[in-house]
Image 1: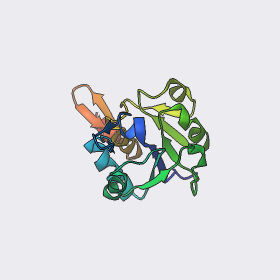
Image 2: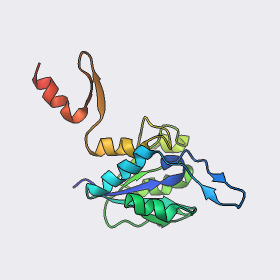
Image 3: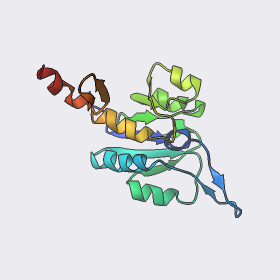
Image 4: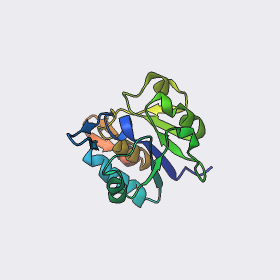
Length: 167
């Protein structure tokens, strides 16, 4: 089977740290890591369909989607997400367990809810929610995992075979 070309990211707790701010007028705002903005753009540029699945809307959501090239799916019940083929999901909370059951491969931040981390289908990332999760997923997709080689420093896993051949 071909590798999935659809990726679904939860927003709160995955691309953000789960916190939101409310100003004196009642407007909500969220913070995203700048590396994730770049990573989402790059994932889209590599031919992936990227969806942000979230239960809540906020001012700036459409602008964020436009800036990164992703599509937004406003769903309280994430089991309602329907993909046109196999997909990868990146989730963090008990509300996301039904989505994990539907996806081909799942990832979660290191600080995800315990039941998500315990799922056999889930790979736990080294990154906490809001601190570069999409960047780590991009590295995995591009086979660019940093590995510390004594005497060589950090190299990407994609270049590891070349380093090993030179010994």
